[in-house]
Image 1 (cartoon, rainbow, N blue to C red):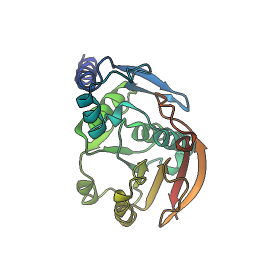
Image 2: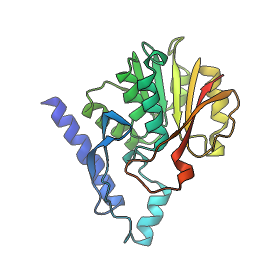
Image 3: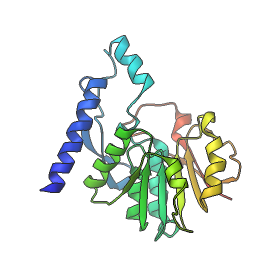
Length: 228
């Protein structure tokens, strides 16, 4: 069957790559405690955290497999979309910096007409495809924000951004997104509630990364912003 072949092919490809980066790790179907409607293929909870060679550790720091985790901000944003389907129903949503694709999948479950997973990392887009298949969801994919900015996404398009603007080097993107998209949602666990130009904080939520990285409590507080 095409579905089974596509799913298994993507799973094997990503798992092989993951095992070259973190020996002894694997992908496993993982339920999300705050978004039980969605199951993702994520790195195993008991993946080896010690015993990496210096070269492996440096390579992992330089290019970590972000897509193997569901980050706290992504989980919060996915939950908010499912709880507020009127914000996305019938619209086009761009999940910028999609990672595992959790926000794009949640948007489609909430009734979005289209959901586009956008990520510069080609393996993240493969993970989005894998997770979309696993949840029976149709997504579209883009490796380039510039391509999306040049396309006509319709007057009701919105962009969702999770854990991107904690890196201050990415802040110029905010003005670009505000110019292009009528609606903008930002979830971030690193800004600690700091104001974002053109955005209003609409709530703070407690969450955690899946699998849990036992991060500092301050990184479990996710602020959700919406365009003013």
